Image (cartoon, rainbow, N blue to C red; front, side, top):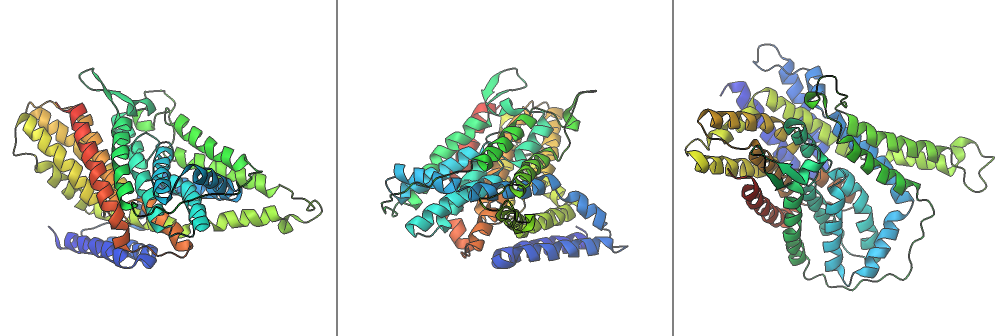
Length: 470
């Protein structure tokens, strides 16, 4: 290993240690690290080339646009009082806080199967916060449960998580393949949706155990009225558009002459519906405001508030992490990690070798994605999986690549639940709590994240092997 590689690896490790130790300063730690990577990469003769334009290319603008656009739409959704209405309806159906926590987590999971994980947290968290305010209870455990449940169910469908989108591009999958998929042997099998749903049911028992002492009764005397349903329609339209776009192939998977979508399609969809909400709100006139200048109307103030409410710290953190991960990827460190994982399965033959490699891919992905953002990690490992399958084929061992693909998706998606910085949804959830005045300690997050992750991963690990084993 070259000295520059050791230096960059040490910088990367220090970055994550500082982010775990300094939760309030995470965006600035990540940004500082990103700047240092670019500075080192711009110095001639270091053996590492990583200039400013290279760093910009590593940022997943699609993800950032999805987060920003959805945050804006969710602001209008919250202002419409629909989350309070949903919380009132939920409170009337639940006997106590424990059951409310379980149902909120499961509900977040179901939504997350069809909406980006971060968007789900942004939509469901206000509902949970409204309930916690009514009951005067600590919202931290419930928001964490919502975040980890969103990460789990994000792997259930093509549109649930960015990692699913990356997998679909690599394996040429459409929306329905996540429900019923056909292997290279021509046989149909249950898709990731059912694997994830079984994991969700099992993990619900973990949430029940963690909240077993929260037996306070809950009730609601007055149900909030919602006069403006347009924000809810915009949010539902966003989800529907994301699902519809999933059936249009990306350029890499499109046939010659076939129409394909740009890489930032999902981001454009989210931003578009936010802009629709902005324009509508901007020209909406309240009672008695007909003669007031535009800038003095309440609608104009709401528009300004919606722009301010976008969590720019979370966006800065994610953008900086993309640059940092891009830097270590450019240095060959992620490829080294991937090659090391692949080589660990070389000791066996036939089915044993496949099982060993599959096991290594799943659990190494769980551990690594707890510290490495799962989007660039998954992107790199998808190419590693292809090379592993080719290597096995050269030895005469036939294996359906979807075994490794789905194992990678399971491990990389759920591993992010081990730490508060392992997944974008966790970062978003903690950001919401921070704005409400609650600082989340790493140990508080891991108290929920670790048992939840272990149960869900083991369930997915066994079911995927059962469905796709050679």
